[in-house]
Amino acid sequence: MTHELFKQGADATAGTAVVATWLEWLPDSLSIIAAFLSIVWFLIRIWESETVKGLRGIPPKE
Image (cartoon, rainbow, N blue to C red):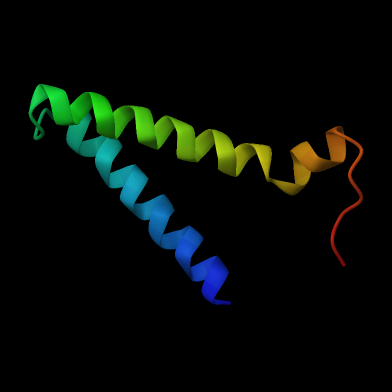
């Protein structure tokens, strides 16, 4: 449960960073870093999703 709670918190943080970047609330240098880290985090989450694991041939968790 704690692991899932961490993932949800990181998702919220990444989403907030994207919105802050889009609304230009962050300085340019911090905006680039926040956008890059958000993209990396979302790509990791997609790669670890059950759908992508199924496409890669990894059996689903029980």
